[in-house]
Image (cartoon, rainbow, N blue to C red; front, top):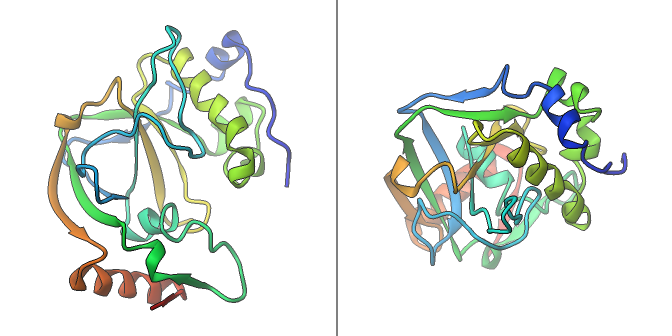
Length: 214
């Protein structure tokens, strides 16, 4: 696996022209969001630890974030199934899933996201293995790229990339200082600890060749 390089200086990030070919989320698009059940479905997380969060803006203020995906499989593989990877024994204990809910969100306005794939990664001097493949041990390094892109592109609302485990899905991270909870309408929500939520999880797991151990 490639090491995670230090983010480019501001001039280099701007020269990468990430705003020229953004990933567009059209108003009305539906997003899948798996989140801890103790929080509202459209709330932004000011802390935690992930590939691209937490970080602060230029003034030192925390930038809340919300992760989502354009498919239900993508939302599961980036959260409750995140640790499975390519293990030959693809199992996950149900207790790891029960604290989460799945929500379907409708976007209320057009969003422009830095599209972290293909040509854009090349212009940043990156390959996928350096930014999108490293595990949690490298998150302190990958999050610096999110912080740098946020600072360099005030007109972008977040990041978009192809899911690490499910390459048919696009994953998104929205910046909470540019997208509000009110921009995300909650169409439905289901607790994965409930019977209907467990059935939904089993259907997704079966599609992905994963066994949920109860």
